[in-house]
Length: 423
Image (cartoon, rainbow, N blue to C red):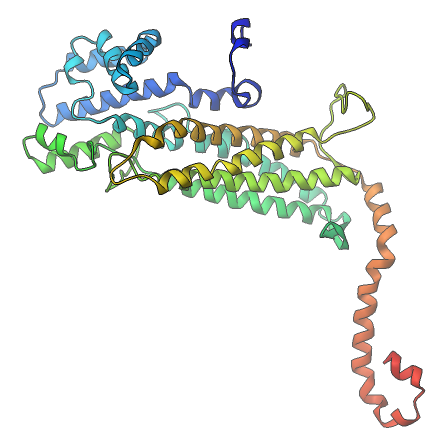
């Protein structure tokens, strides 16, 4: 619950109103800066193992203060330095005076910046970090559960006939379960895409200011093998099997596109499903759950607005539009990097995951409580049955004409004109 003082500041509704505590924490400042410190510890450990003059006492000091962050001091340092990474280097050094000279040794800001994003999005080793955004989406935040609930729903209603629509005009019969299969198939494709994005994501690694590793080559007095081993060791400590072979100062911003496009794709799936439910609610055939004391409208209490489906559509639309940001960012990254990728990544990266988080948890709630009205469905079928029958009449007529016409050809001259027209 926010305090009164928080009401004087803008708060993102994605955090204050919608998303789960787990996903909110995943993109919190606390987790980000703890991850920075873990990365500095990984770097120091690997540099020590490869022969740099770093002591066990320095590493132990860093480890003992990995989560002891003075956020007020860091904010003051950033105000003076106008550099967030160096502000936290100074803050960490303040509580680790012995280790101060070796914190961030040889690294550039993107060592902590980009690697933290990779660890936040798709951490492979749960012993390194508690939460993993893509796994949260697939397992904790209910995509697997939504698929399970929909599978149960479509099995239950697999044989219940319903009027199918094309162009939202009455077409031919399908079943309630078959229609749910369309939704289910899209979500299974989304699981595949999320798994691919997670498995393809690599660590930026230990690459230096322009991706050449020149600073580390200097630290190790030109020993290329040790520099390559340093990159490998830190990558493994962070829980990744592979690092990108080639980077500028940053990893390619196409990496963000790969991850965010899977979330935008998921948004499109959820938007379609919830739009269908919205339309079916208007037809009174299927409804999302409606609580006992829920109010559909402040002025029209008889209304049963599909507010959960509408919320999903609203946030899915926001999620879909966010992909434009990384697309444009990747296209304008000059040479080895330019800083106009920084401020916007602070918004579109977390907002994509936060939005995906809430639409999936809401969709799970919807699929767990879908209500079907068979009598309404049956009435609509009966009302449109005469029109649906015309397709069968046309097919039978065409078949009979093709089969009978050759038999009547010898008698054509004596045939009544009306009979010829029918054939």
